[in-house]
Image 1 (cartoon, rainbow, N blue to C red):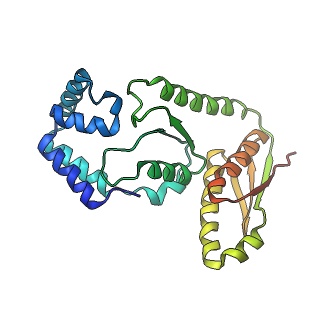
Image 2: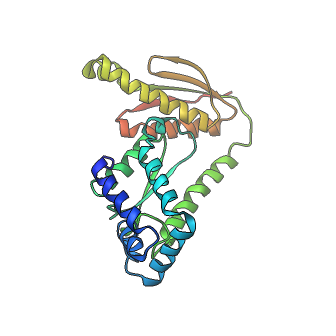
Image 3: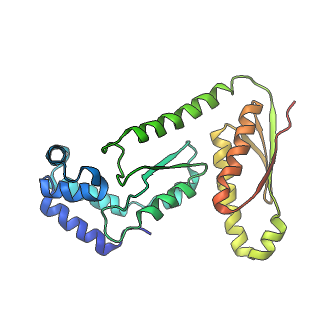
Length: 243
């Protein structure tokens, strides 16, 4: 799924020999922002920006740090609302990299992440048409602003969740695979509880019991948990009585 060592070395060799040049800027743009790859003014600006941003040695150090960083193990613990965007035709500059698969992996493994496919082949949002990316970001942030506005009243609420058909699913999968799936399930539920300020009271098997300071948070959390489990093909039953 990621970039192979051989492909990384090819990319690094190009960086070492071309950092800050128009030719390197054109090669980089061809992979990341093809809509601007032949725009002379943009390439001139990009090459200048590279030279001002870092020396060739510093750029090489950043390149090595980037390749050595693997965040897959912590994606499931992210609690902040997350928007993942990519051009619908984006392929990527790194040879051997499956960019669509990597983007989907990010979206599927960050609890509750929203994925938006933008028109065109540009990866970065400031290509020829930045408005779709701006609209996606604005809509995403406004959704959470509106959501927070509903959480002003305080009314103690409890939330119960469990997995539909868990017994049959566990029997079909076997103990090891089922336990691995439960670990991911628990991680997602806890991430959603933290996001909506729920307090975990008890966990029994595949079920959770949590409390919230209002029904709005509990209901939103239940919907978020249900949606976040879809990549795992798990159906969740949730109830939020309040008093």
